Length: 305
Image (cartoon, rainbow, N blue to C red):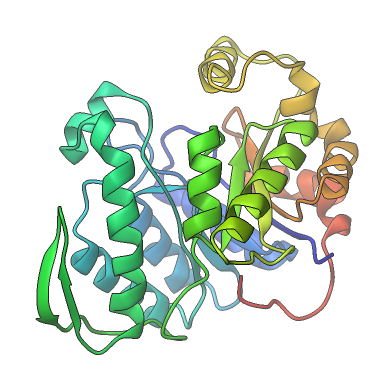
């Protein structure tokens, strides 16, 4: 199994200097990728803007969205934005999509009612694939209508392996039917294994197959006890999945290696590590994470996806 390890910044404001240090450090230390999350109403930078900036600083690492909200965006415009970023970065983009956060402000920002999100995503994601692969797209659906619409440029490989997030049963089934990979978050190894099996079962039921290498997780980690803000965030995120021991979801840095090995045993192999508290110095943070876990990453060519 090919293990890849990337990093994501803490869920807080990321200054230009911090993003620069994180990006250059990932390239220097041998990490696989940089991932950014999305929240319009929070301090996180816009994912397309942040990743475009990071791409201009580097030549090797890949870039992912963990995860990008799809409902509320124009598939045609988004297809062009992401293809443009992929072309400028030399084919290093790894898009992952979701329904958006369960937050009233986010739903207002995207102009989509919560009960509409799933149906919009199911119509929009196949359209993205078509815009990336086909010269012209004609479509007449409940939400989007196009007649011989051309969207350029195309991605470097004229398409992407598209991943999806989510942990609820409907989200897992949708991932199996529509995506090329699953990116869990705040999950225990046991939940990761159950989720992987549910996605594979849904894919088989739809006459599809998801590669065994295309299962991963965003893995938050900590240094000692959780700060109050991080503890509140942990509680919010776990409301859907239910209670779990802290170490099974958010390991201490000293326990990160063992936690990742358990996730690999559960069938997950692509990891996005994320400190729950923003580090004061990214160079020191990346050196510590390198020493704690990067040796688990499989050496060799950095294949796309």
